[in-house]
Length: 109
Image (cartoon, rainbow, N blue to C red):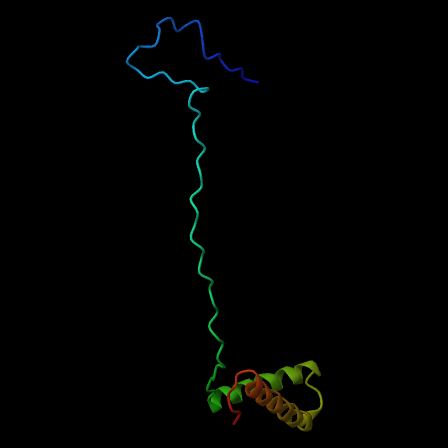
């Protein structure tokens, strides 16, 4: 632990000059810094969310249906023949149309 040196050390043999103002800690304490009051911050208000309308082209819709139908067929192990493929397509078409109608706010074609 470091020790402090006394303020009146024997090394200083010259008295303080009479022209320099003498101040001690007892006479004028250093005023504590006072924090300036801040202006209140403006509250951020969120803009109202408007429904987003996205137009889906027929090609994009068909690609979405094809992917959903493929994933259905993959889940069942690609078994069942053409009847199952048609069923996968119809179910995927209904699923995509429902998502487009509800999720994106776009009219399903």
